[in-house]
Image (tube, rainbow, N blue to C red; front, side):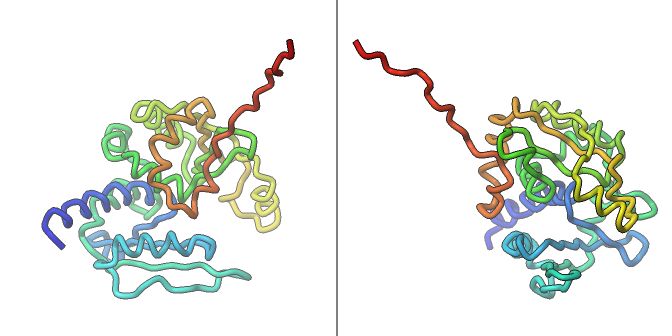
Length: 232
């Protein structure tokens, strides 16, 4: 690999890392914050995505992604070696107790790029409905104040109209009642990106989405022509 290719890969890793930490990626330390390792785990449905991320960080890894039993289903996961490379990001996105947090607005405003946003969307994005151009970012793990910060950043950096939305997912509420999981509490909120920002969002992230994630993004719908031709 040439020095230019290495430089490009380093930049790409930085941008993607911001997106996946905002999403499902996790940084873990075993030596009180001296070094950290990146841990990735996704459902079997997103196996291709896991191997895609592995390809990006392959030279940090000893093992390729492994298949893991998860209840009645399977996940694919890999982790990097511990490295000081990840320390800067861990100090931004984690508190002293290891809980994921959102950095100051001014910092994240400079770090989040369209590429990072695309990977965040692949991790946490979902459709509002098949008939809507609006989408969600499932940020239920963050506080309302942190979600406010994220909405401000989406507006300032990308001019996307975004706001907090209550999580009304019936399946989440059912699981909360059944298993008493606080994470699935229906009082949690997520980010809604308005359908008015559809074209901007598509321009920003769609070229970066893996084909296997196109189902997560609203399709372009052409309005039928209702004008009837007149017969003279």
